[in-house]
Length: 306
Image (cartoon, rainbow, N blue to C red; front, side):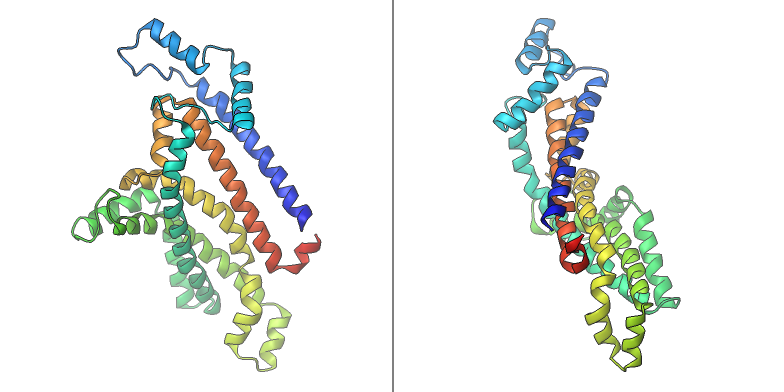
């Protein structure tokens, strides 16, 4: 088990390193410079700003200095667009909002998708199965940037319970969470259905039926755990996808999460802000995948000796 965890940690470090390296050079290849929007900035002032932020040095030197600041000082650097603000401060202020939205969306997706998949498998090739898969397919096809405005127009606008956009009251998290959870619920439903159908066709399940074991007991005691393994494998990437996918939803509903800073960083060519968010999300995805692998190890004893 320890060997598997160590392997996953090393893989995460390598992936994050490659990802940040690619983004480092990619954002600098975009035409323009981060100070072009400051109309009052003279050439001398722009040169001074580049020198202050270390952008006047050759790219390889900037690259080495960036990793040195992170590994030695734990510093993501200063934001170029929001002068006087540290990237780490912006992340620490906005991440709790994105995390709260992501966790609630993931829980909703599990509460909807897993039971839907179980029902579809138990009523295989019957109307309940077809209805569940139609709902799942709709969740996959209708993307968040379409679903969000539909909720704003059809639910938030005519009702006083929700704001169309904003983050000023507790109920403001409901519509963004529902918008985000649909895609995850759809994939979980399909994975759970496939896993359940595979388990229900196994010989030991048929033997239990032949011995007269009640169906509910067979499902709860013998079928659920192995059937959920494909879904659990998906949960790690799904959580990371919800957090990163919330950029669109946060923009639509004006949620003050990290999505606003990622959009700002791209628009203003704020190198440090974009790289800080990419690095943070890369680590977050690695942690989510690691937790998913650990859950699988506890669910399947055979993996503990792999």
